[in-house]
Length: 124
Image (cartoon, rainbow, N blue to C red):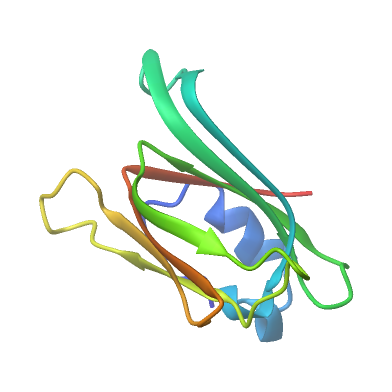
């Protein structure tokens, strides 16, 4: 199950996606990746950096747009196939730190280790 307190839109994923798919590693196809260094966001009312991933399950029945705001860290991967065994998100909502989300990969050919202040998910 997607059990997070502070991911915006997670309740919609919980209600619409079957429980057997409610794990980030099930969404291993990266269909689209965007990064913007100077985007204006209504949450910040200022410029911030945003990374947006469009990911899907194996059959591409469910597609999730995942946006990570005010990020720092490393992101690199082999662009041969856009596939991976998935990723994980840790939420440190009670820790008192600014960057409460940690997005990281299980793959050796997809190495990313990102920290962000806010995550928004949208089921497409």
